[in-house]
Length: 199
Image (cartoon, rainbow, N blue to C red):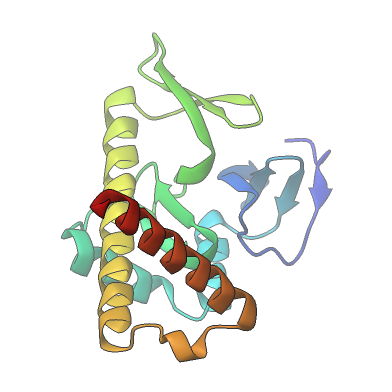
């Protein structure tokens, strides 16, 4: 492997991260990090970066896996939520502890196709394509499971937000002057409309 990518010592997964894949350099495993508009080389393994990023966003890798289990029941090759606020959902191509495991961001997958050698050709939002050592069946399965995790989590959050709104609905007295004026205009128009219908 040629070290022709920008070396970066500290790296946190972010909304621009598309994929992280391991690469052998001597006796050490590095990580090739692909972002939408950049590429980096990290001296840490992909799983180490994932673990550190989970901690960066206030959780842990074990905690994120447990969250996935609670929401979906998935325990084998589980997708994880690295950060729900910026919609960072990742899934591994194989067991996370295996040295050949690649981590992929759900948000940036544009297309995927099967290849003759039983691998998958994955295209990302920036039109970069990579041949990955995973069957299209396994890739689709991981993709769908991650989508399910995202959907279930968002529904759970939506339910909590609705509950909070029902218990403490916005009060007219708390509206700003412009909002009160707009509310008054809407009510006036409704009143005028009702009068016309009665005539």
